[in-house]
Image (cartoon, rainbow, N blue to C red; front, side):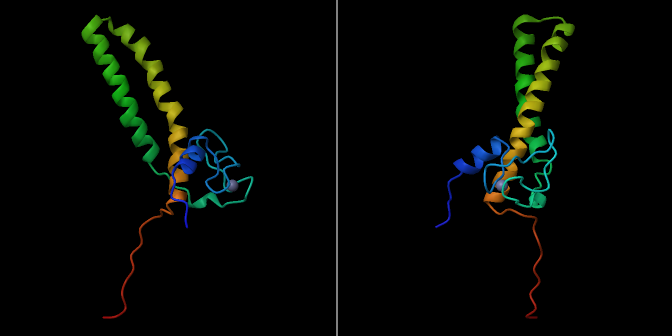
Amino acid sequence: MADTSLTGPISRGLRGRCPRCGEGSLFRGFLTLRPRCESCGLDLSFADAGDGPAVFVILLGGFLVVFAALITEVLYRPPFWLHAVLWLPLILIVTLVPLRLIKGLLIDLQYHHKAQEGRLHFRNDE
Ligand SMILES: [Zn+2]
């Protein structure tokens, strides 16, 4: 029976590890994928997270920063330069840190669910 638990793929994905063996690293650079797993040799050319990681980062990070800025403005009314000092570093943190985590997670989940690009199948019975 196939393993349907998601704890393995989620754990491996968040650590940026190979979806098959969990040992080799997915990444060669910050976000660049390796062509193959250095441990088991899995061809990683199937991996295509597309815009998924960026979308999740924009939605989550945007909510956090805008919510924090609005609460701060309503409660304390700080000068605009203080908004810039507070929120620019927070924007960098909430976008760059989770981007790699989410990309690894989506790729490992793609492998786990055998997700791939849709294809058209034509019937020949007409
Ligand atoms: Zn591997």
